[in-house]
Length: 311
Image (cartoon, rainbow, N blue to C red; front, side):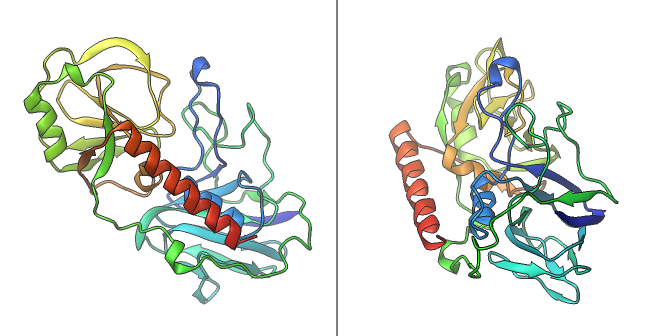
């Protein structure tokens, strides 16, 4: 079914799902939604599969016109969505009638919002995923005039209007440190360099995208290197380049790299990083592997409770 016509594509709008797994050995990153928790919730509100393709829109400017009656949801960043002449609902399912216009006027909180439609968006799978990977030319940012198609769905599957209770909505403006596991090459840095990393505030530079955040702030003292023999890049790796500044690798990151990695961001923090933007500040906090696993377990249990609420 024809769902939307794009009147304005905004700063950057792409199709995403939960990513393209198992292909790093071929140099293909996972990609997928930068804030996967919000992405999944947008689908749960419609009783879609977790992995149903949705729009990831950045900052502001996306404008859609409904081509048919469409049931949809918006989750993630607050980009001031308006439905015709009134604010559009967020974190809840709602309906647009044919001809209605949805637009995201300005960023208020967070960076990326997810627009899901009942059934998910219908785009071809490439290597097992519908996610856009711009650098690899797998898909491309959406443009003005394009028509978005929704996949078939069970019309009785989402008769009730589902809303996520406020206590389960992510805090996008938290000021807590980003928790990291040290290594695998933290021995490439002096004790003073490690102390600088863990006790300084860094600012995300304008040189950032879905691949990585470059940062501005105190230089980390390097004991040896910073070059290493290129090795695999885990999701959330924190490299330190020759200028001593951390670079955080994200969902579109390259498969291998030749800079020493001082730390790896705990998996539970990746969704929050996906809502950050240039100018935001970051501090790092060391945790151990067991703490990282405990945090991930807690987050999984929280998402399971949300699923129970919305089924």
